[in-house]
Image (cartoon, rainbow, N blue to C red; front, side, top):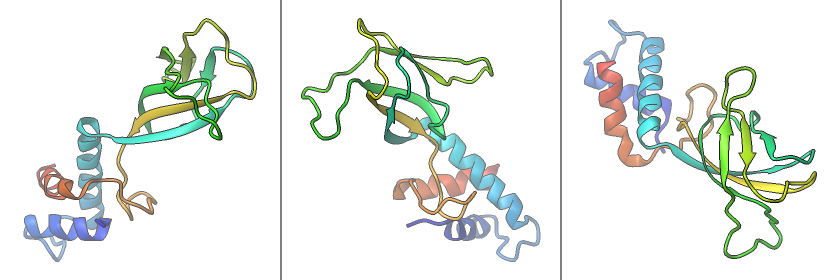
Length: 155
């Protein structure tokens, strides 16, 4: 698994600055962070979560879904112990809330979701690198390392 330390070492080697005489580790970490951000816009991490609704309604607050770049699919209603087949894909939109952030999931269905219903949400997020910004795991594919090293070195 790639970690911050291994990726930083490769960036230092590419820049021929293993002793950090020209670029500090903080500078290199920021360059790696930017490279991961750019990579994540091209090939984001795909994630699935569920949300149990605390109240009835078509407008669902998704602000707690951290790191979300985009919502790609919504399955409602969803029951983990007895999921329907085929999945009940719902038509949806993502709206901005009063803060200007895209934090409202609107389910465009004939019936209204009820309190206690579960919505299964597919979304994309930025990749993580173990050791960077408190991440304990790496979600980047192994073949992304060379691209990230190049991206960080030219930043």
